[in-house]
Image 1: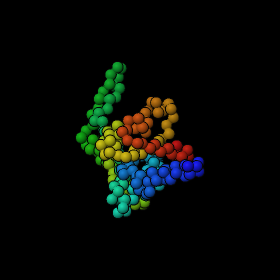
Image 2: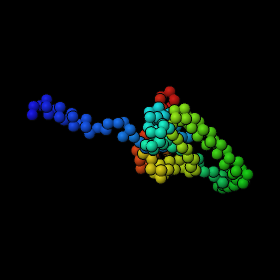
Image 3: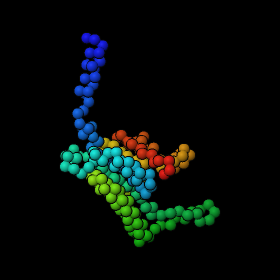
Image 4: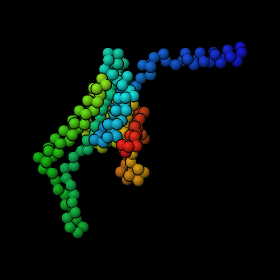
Length: 194
């Protein structure tokens, strides 16, 4: 066998091993975590722009099971707050029942508005979408939800915190990158957004 024939045989073998259809290499279930930041909605739009063919609401896509889950995590309401009340002491102030209900209602309305905006973006491109609101610490709850739902790809936005802010405040995307049990895509916004 000559070198040209060997090269042609290797190329033919390589082509045969590659899938014939793009649909054979699909991500079945994706999750995008959103909050009120522009960077999280940029990440959602990035997924819509780049993966819409895998997540569309066509009959073929439904048979494949492509689904986008948009998740929003609310911080739990603290029922009390401590205030300094003189030298060396602090006073705890407990929220009344009506105040707790009012805050809970405001949180639900804010979550509904965020998810409505996300759903509108997805529907414009006919993306098969479900929404989820969870209460807790965002970084922990996002990783936990991704694991429980057996997500194939977790997508989060990056706020572009500097090294010092990230060290003190922590970064949800950084935490997810180290603790999620699935592949994760961190979408950085363009420089003019950050």
